[in-house]
Image (cartoon, one colour):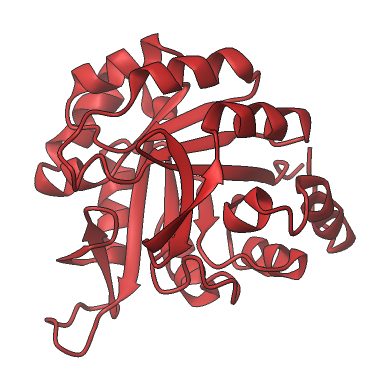
Length: 257
């Protein structure tokens, strides 16, 4: 029996508002995060992901109050990321209502953080948030041709993305949120090559993110190896619904909740 594919809306939050742009730039307002969270919960979302998109680059803490208010509104698992640097940050997020915590920039700076979080709270709490792009011509090459980025996709880390995902899974990451920075916000479809390559290297659940623009884009991401599919823009601006995505996945032969 295969596990049901999860459909996850993502709330990218900046200064208390949900925002969305292209390749993490030119952000536009998409609404109040607490209101949107409640709408998605009622609309059949399997989980919610809440990312404070400027917490790392702006050196701010995640907005705990907003997480608390969001958690009070929803009855589905809530993953929170952005500005998580220590096990104490994780502890505080769990206490205000998060079910899982995403880590990106801080784990690249100090990979031991992954093991510390997994050991203290369990693998099921730890999500590696990997913002990945193809290596640019002016950058040092990596074995796979993909590199990890930090600070909301603003800085290349010079680390091979496939090796990093594999190392993170071995270190205790319970799942990987795989965001294609090349596809993010473009609505051109998920990066299927990236999904396939990471899937071949890790056995933890994989959440595909970046590029969703039509209901037809989701099933190919699952076929490429994703266990869950995540989107933001298309849901926030009402282009189609979670129910539409689930119906498309069912028609493609996938089990959904």
